[in-house]
Length: 363
Image (cartoon, rainbow, N blue to C red; front, side, top):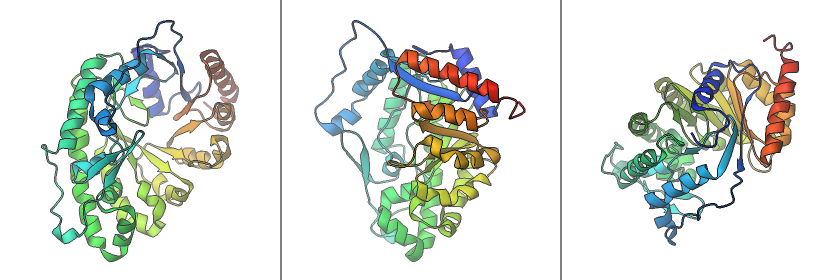
């Protein structure tokens, strides 16, 4: 891989240590800085139309390579491109349409009445699926080991129902159409397995290990994110009835998984999640405008006491307080905002702090 601190063998070793909770020296730390280069190639240019830019495979792959070649990846960071059509991609594979803005896309709900909507099944001829296959294969051909190609953003379960139905209507379905809601969740689960398994199969032909938008790497097996952003809107009781059964099935099907816990309103479900043996870790995202990572030490310790890995994005000045408070094993932290020299100094300081703390954790 290009512009990484570690060679591929050492990087794989470090990430395997993370999954096995064996990284004793410090948390895995990932950051990046612009590469100092006197003569950079021109920035890729693409179509002016927003939707065409998203769907222009050649342009998107050129942007991925440009970013990788002009960035220095520090600590356990690595260059990655996960082909992306936005968070409602799986909903689009299941039947809805997508609309695009410069920075994201969103679903146009398509289920007005459950009775008149056909069963949800995987369709190889779905244009959104075909585009994702095209983008993934093109990225693999271009990467050729220079950067990792990740699996696209996939939101199954209740989140995909929201794509098809709309958030407010889906919330009312829990009261008015509970059996139909559950039926569609399980139909989408079958589509999720097809999509994730097939994309992983395509990637595995040319690349060892797997990654995705969460920016973790597993060098030996498929891993994918489990999540439910819809859970922010619902009670603990509804979570256990409508979300948990399918979530458990996802976790049992995936060889490894980290749950994306997004927003303070979702903390009500944390105890339930920590009881699930097949979930390897929790990514805690407090949400925009909420206190920084160093203010969530008790939540992170609770996750760690349950034997789960921790994943979190931080400010640079969060790193040392977190190293002082947490066992480093099974912790992955990303941060930004520093130049290369400052970032490398911070990584060394984190290692020094953790070395002093080793006796505390009886490592």
